[in-house]
Length: 179
Image 1: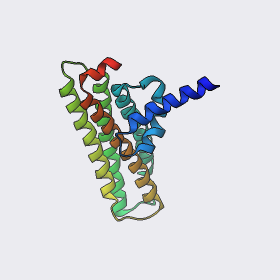
Image 2: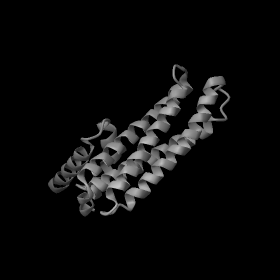
Image 3: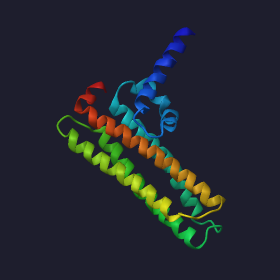
Image 4: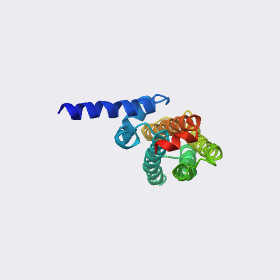
């Protein structure tokens, strides 16, 4: 029992250390805790995990938005904003998938260029989320509030993923040796 408790504390330290660079630490710790056993001190594994969980959440929100697009409750400007969100989330998912694909094939020789691409795509994903949120600016209602909360959560996760990628980038290609 003592060994399990010690192992759990060590794994908690891994995720807390990884998430220390993020803006939304509680979300980071909650969404990435299950990766502690495998990621440990590997900045590239934490970066991949951050993008992976963001993709999972973005897919759920994208599906929710897709279903809501036929909702008769939303009319006028809210309906237009929702349709823009659906489109933005497709672009967002493309950017997240490109980021994860690049993170999976990092190498010493092209590391700086690859990291530049990943940071650009993740920044674009954040812009896509902002575009979605901006469409509902000043709007009220339960449906709008639910949409905003879901999109904001993906935005927080994307921000955390970008922070983990930035940590990897500053560690340099030497971080690949910890994989």
